[in-house]
Image 1 (cartoon, rainbow, N blue to C red):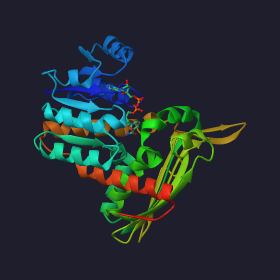
Image 2: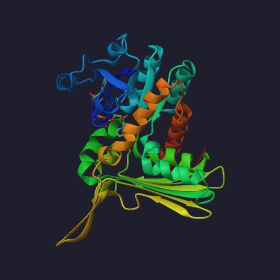
Image 3: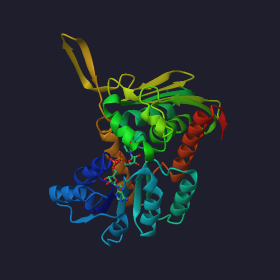
Image 4: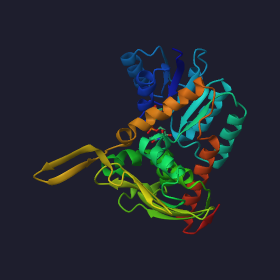
Length: 337
Ligand SMILES: NC(=O)c1ccc[n+]([C@@H]2O[C@H](COP(=O)([O-])OP(=O)(O)OC[C@H]3O[C@@H](n4cnc5c(N)ncnc54)[C@H](O)[C@@H]3O)[C@@H](O)[C@H]2O)c1
């Protein structure tokens, strides 16, 4: 069986999920190289999983001539420089979201992808690969709810993880770019339109630390699309009950809800507190299958010499819209795109 030899940069919260999938859960992939700025992360993965090559810099890793593809899970401000260098080294490139943290960077990524049309480029908006979201898209495409004209999103991180979010705040790009960008991507995908105007508001209502970085712990946005549809977004970082990602899509003939109750699984507890459905606690748990399926798609694209449906241009559009929402929040005004 042909196995694509892969390297990964970033062995943090998400990098380890991708690394584990590449190393153990995708028969057509082989993890041969790992890279992190932290020596102990590299040493641990190499020792425990028997990975032959370990690096402290990405630039060193991509010189490894055995590599065919790379997964970029480094901090967001490094994505575009890592994308460009990876493509220039002749590698197929998977990068996690966001594409870049400025529009100029996203355009640079577009040029790099256009200059290497024979190499696969994939952007990791994993929610599109989550079985429930993929099923909802299929139903919409089949006309089950008629023309969708409204989408509502809630993406709420758990309060128990808020210290991590505060640490991440200086480089995250803000709540719309860091969190709501997933929902912005889904809104464009489900509604099949582009955003025309945005109004947003938010604040550091619970954790004033976010205000120090000009960020919010909760923010909302309303967007009008160019095809007579609209979307509403709420991103928050202090959900008491866990990791809550919920979506509703309303069409002319019906509506769909995904994870209206963000259940951990199908087990209901009946005890002296009442009847309890536990909630997912983090993104790794809720989207485990989506992370695996998106990485499988990347490997399949390489083997089948095709490009994934999601493009570099989606990454730019999603970032543009997230920036417009950030601008609207700061300026307290409607922003037109
Ligand atoms: N798709 C999703 O649901 C999702 C979820 C979480 C994070 N992300 C994205 O994944 C990326 C990583 O996030 P994270 O939460 O795993 O971050 P993290 O801080 O937990 O990990 C970052 C990793 O990158 C390494 N690193 C930092 N600078 C480096 C450098 N110069 N060279 C090589 N390695 C370097 C660190 O050592 C660490 O291993 C971010 O862009 C984030 O937006 C996406």
